Image (cartoon, rainbow, N blue to C red; front, side, top):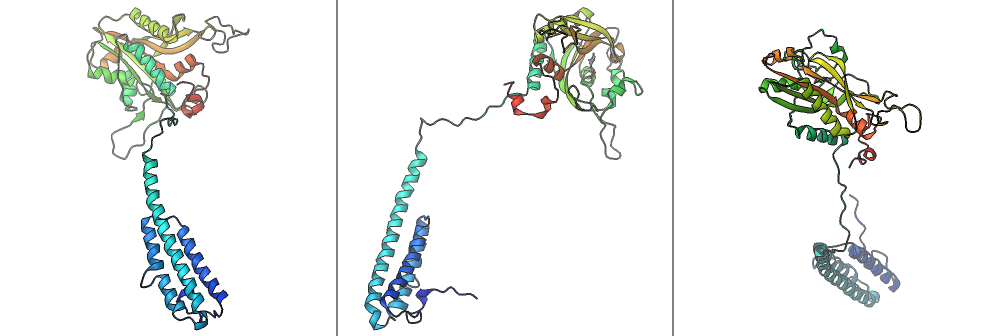
Length: 377
Ligand code: DAH
């Protein structure tokens, strides 16, 4: 076992000390060692430990020095050793006492510093987040529809083909399913299925009508999924708001009037709307709503000359699909198609946000770049 070469455990003779200078040097070493230990940060407990190890009666270093150096010193060195010993002892005791006082005083200072409150210091400024722009647009559109009597409902993002397709009058081999070629879930063997990520919010039309009798006036915000490659206008996940109004006396005029009201509330009173015939299996007739181009005011001309790049000179921008609910759909929810009628619509929120705020790349919504998000506080 390696042993520590501790000079205080050997006599002076054993260390070959023969004259006063060597004695002084030896004492200086011990003193340095004490000073080094005293300089370390200490609390009351550490101060006590240091005191025990240096001045402890039984095995403290001073006792060893007295034992091994002083008592066993040759007569010629006894005076110098005695003098050095007394000086060392006084130095150590004074050092320990002073440290103790400093600790006691120091403790009081720390307590004071902790309790002090400086009201003139600037506060901690925490950055305040905000709703994502898509969430804000959802909110804005929900507010418009709620103000005219619609309620907001939600539905599951994982759907059965029945709700996503069949009950919406889209039988298994209907060609519109091709547009919605989508994500099916891999289910454990024996699990009832199949299940898919919903391709639109329209299934919630069925879920709502199953649960309640007319009158129905709901909008359905939510996420939808399709197997699209990401680019400036496509994403495998995007957002829609579905709308459905069913009652006993809803006309095509109520339908177009409601849509026009919404579009003017959302884009401003100066925009015009129009609809064109279209096709959806769950509406009859089906239409596509357009809004007069918000970038060129519907003129089709860019302000700097040439053709408006947003509407490509058409003066109109395609907004979303809609229509009067196909009577076949009522058959799936036990409504009497002879007694009720209504309208439905489904709009892409990302597209509506891009149009209103002049954003030309859909992907920025999903990248969570704070430089972009901060522009919509
Ligand atoms: N679900 C359709 C889609 O995602 C959008 C749609 C069109 C919804 C017409 C409707 C509607 O409710 O009446 O492409």
